[in-house]
Image 1: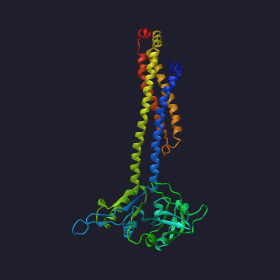
Image 2: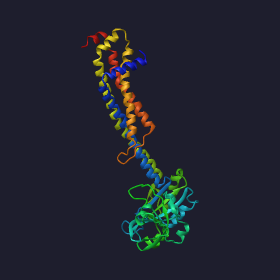
Image 3: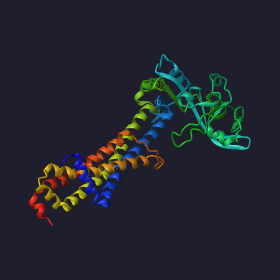
Image 4: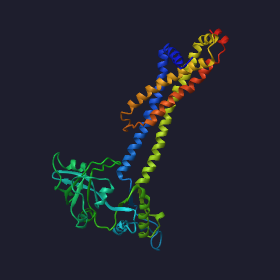
Length: 407
């Protein structure tokens, strides 16, 4: 028998028990669809997390004040000294001679206060900083202008607002540019409106107001000569680690310690992205492995059905062997049946899996990849061959005399 004859014979065998064949195909379908959908969920989750991290800026380092550390002057008892980020530290990091890999340094003073306009009011996070902060944090001004160095130098009472703050204070259709907002009793004029930014955490990045840090010290936080945190932007994503080391060395020198014992929290967005990618890759593989169990169960179903088929057709096998059918023909016939079951199940599983990835699952938009689809289909067919070989070999190994005696 040739391949065409094997396919024709296998199709007749499967058609003789349509319901049984359909249920076996269903088992493979569920396994393949589960693999595709769960791997897609893992990929979608990974992409969502990475997009949130990228929104923070993959070539930025956030250095925040941790408070106090170490031992202070030699006085009675254990003492601690203040760890601060000062204007002088910002100036040193901005010096290309001291920090050639740092593109910009943005000091940050943050406070939560009540913003009001006319009869409307809301709570908002006010960030006092410099113009470089907008670029480092991937903010874009869509209306009006950005902050300028002269705003910082002149302590200008200018503010740029996010879209959430705009909608909370202004009626639809009202142009906020030029309007006077009050943060507590301090008056600021709106000079710009930010584009909507995707969330990167539990806080709303659009419920913000950005003002010059000098003005924030004058009117909101009080003057203290140090900052709660700074945003350091490297000149490129490949120079982030070098920029981090330069910033650490400057802060360590200013605080009389070493970079290894730096009393600040340092968040390297590039390292965070790499760690997240590795973690999510492991998570995706785990989801795929869990889904593959159902594919394994489908394969066991194929073996079970094929064993039943061989038992039911024992006399047929005996007759074929008695009239000269070679072992290869019997083996090919039953192995082809198993392959057809897995093939049809694989095709149907791919279709159902791709349909399933079009829907959001537990808040995640699945992302199917060609590699996962092809792999799931190939594994499904391989499962059919693997689990179908034993029943096919058993059929091919039957002695004609024994097969003809079977009742």
